Length: 187
Image (cartoon, rainbow, N blue to C red; front, side):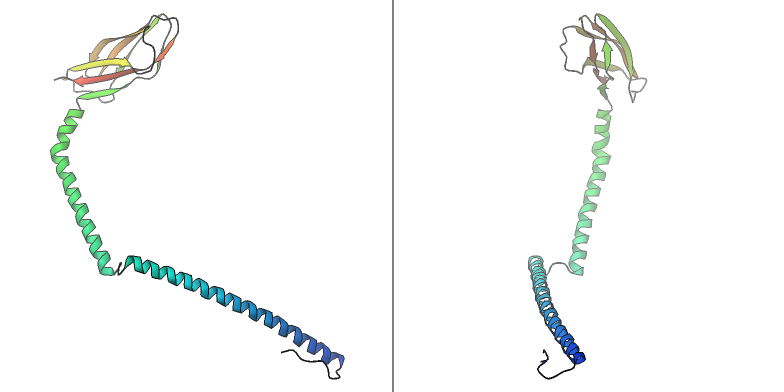
């Protein structure tokens, strides 16, 4: 509360009254700010409380120590059953599938350039060769999207470990090509 200066006062007393009045006004302003901040804090607390209550409503009784343990136990049982299924498949089906897949080699050569009116010969060794006693059948083709009127490919030789081939270009332009292959074990 402000102090009145209506009484006769000395200069020091007047300064003291002015200072007290200034501090009173500042305190009133700060009290208003504190009240405003308290209201904002209460509003934020209510928003958070509502959010927590909303989550609790969605979860229900939800997560208790025993419900989490039961859920984990059920999940572990399902994973164990799947693991046993995969193990059974690996023991029964996988060897047959692997044996079938091992009958094939397929791929593509690096890009080669066959000069105009020229030829090119090379060989390819399989990354994983067949057994030395295996008989193989090889099919070759052009792996690029080119007009094939001027190009021909010939299989020269085929073994369990790879094949040799030649390409002829009867055209007037060089051809950049890749040779695709499929090798099949026939015995």
